[in-house]
Length: 292
Image (cartoon, rainbow, N blue to C red):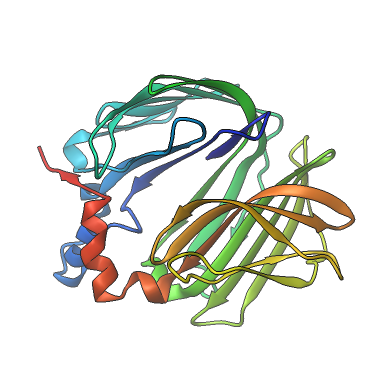
């Protein structure tokens, strides 16, 4: 899930993993034929805004994974669904400089969608934008962050490593008066490139729309390429870079899509860079592993 405060000054991203797709430990285990996904679980949290960024992504084993129909927990952090809202309890330690990240996030969907999209040719990777538009309440005591805003909640799952199916992708979520516009552009290894453009109303109904023309964004500090979409003749702009890594970027961008000026959450992912040996050696500094 991701969220942005109503004043645009604060943001939050939380990702729950079974078989963490970005785990160097999981990648190494797969090469040894020991790639049980339940041994590589984590809840990643990234806080942005005044007071600086906080990042935590501690990987844990199946002994600290607890699942039931309405609750998912890894170690001290959890996600719980009560039928109307999702409550996320976070209690993690940041990395590489240790500090506590502890608080609660509540997502109340405006609508749920049943639309699911096959992302690759063989059908091994599925994306489900469960709740494209949510009201979000954030209450953290470590560090002190309290705000309300709008957010998004989705799910991805697959039957093979991401790097086996994709070279590169970009994704964008843009709130609009009528719902949420989502753009997904993928460079696939075993099929032609895929462009997904969905307008999902507040009632959860999804309608395909035409993808606007491509627009180039400046590369990141790590020289990861960023691309997006914009109406013909419109120049997209990076308002803020939230994450800048050797293979991944998360940004807030300003553009115009289908006649609407929007401020959107945007990501770029380069899987060719992710599998580079140098990048794999860097990852443990941001992703410690707890095996007890």
